[in-house]
Image (tube, rainbow, N blue to C red; front, side, top):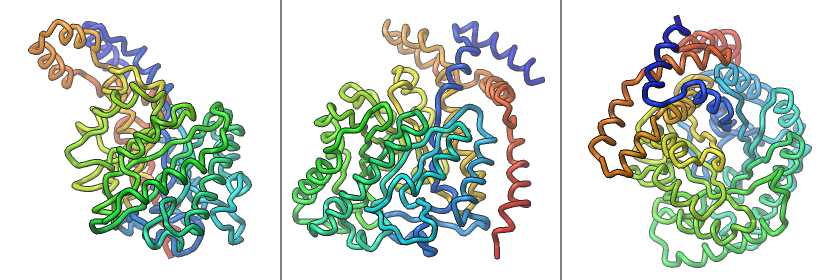
Length: 421
């Protein structure tokens, strides 16, 4: 039934000049970097208290969250089995495995992530990395790399340097570049008097962090901007303009700008920013999320905004210059299911874009036939995309349709439910 439906769909798309076989072959080569923090509500393994402030908040108390790295890896393995294609893992520094010893963040080394890297290698996964500038006593006043306190600032610079070295070693071990991303929560809840000084301090801190060049075959740096956050509603030091300027001023360092779908005004979409930024930068990092009225990191769904991101990446031929990662956390539903839903939606958005009759649409636009452009774009929405998606999933050996949900429910019954005291 699935193959028969696919054959009919292939004929429909072929009539419009779209090669569905080529589209799914291209799709299979695009990795999505899954964020580890969906599995434990951004708690990390530094302490039993887990998440403590710093501009991040997870809501909900659905039973069965991962309590240690082994459980988190088990949940990730379950998730990857539900996803077509070969993907990556995005890890935060607070997920270090220190053998029960207290290790400060500025003293972290590759050894504390060796088990993660061994696991990724055994599963054929690439890895990305993040410094953790939050949930720490030295971040309690809301400032890290832009702190006026030299001791605090130096601690966080050293943490950033340590993480870059860890990221490079991860990349060397796995044979694929590790993108190490910088996001800081620095800012003020209310209106500041001096917006300039913290940004001058942040620029100095970044210069010190990135001073040592690392081999781009194994490691890439990214900086992530934000419009506002919890506790920094009025002023964020690392704004979009700040990091966009910094990334462009440091092109020789091959610095990536990270665009997070939840970090802008609710009426903005990062899809419109991609072509502008990539005129001046070689590569970018995307953190795909879903904000609901604010940067709330909801599970990604196949929304118009998500489709627009996929379309821009394909229409602009930007897939080879874009690192796609996910960034959401929902503790109100099954955490493994949240991963599966969000990642499969991201993959669907890319497939929908790859199935567009782009040349026909581009020709209509070039000839100023805007009537045909709009008509064809709307007609494209009712083409049999679902048949191509089902065929792709079957071909890749993962559950078709909602069949994955039953497997996750069995995993919840046999594994997750037993974590509840």
